[in-house]
Structure formats: C-alpha cells, structure tokens
Image (tube, rainbow, N blue to C red; front, side):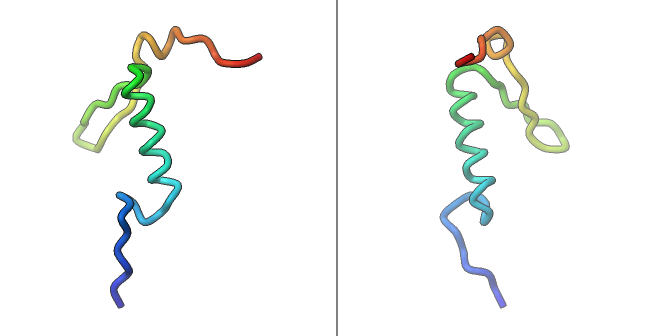
Length: 56
C-alpha cells in the first residue's frame, strides 16, 4: 500500500525542522554546506567559529 505524500521534504517532521535550522544558519553565514560524494557536509565558517554564545 503506498504511503501518503507529504509537502515536507522528509516525511519525518523533525528532519524538516533541522533543514530549516540549517538553512537559517547558512543564510546568516555561520555554517557552510559542501556537497561531497557521500552527501552534503555542513561546517562552521570563520564567523560561526568566532560568534560568542548567547546568554550566560
């Protein structure tokens, strides 16, 4: 029996939320995405490494 389709990129909502968080971090310049043969790789940029934590 076929599964119902979902408007989200993943049928698991937590993966959709993670993708949104990663997209926001990439847009802010804190994380970069590199496409490798095994799949996408995410790494902190220089800005991401030098941004102080928020809060105490």
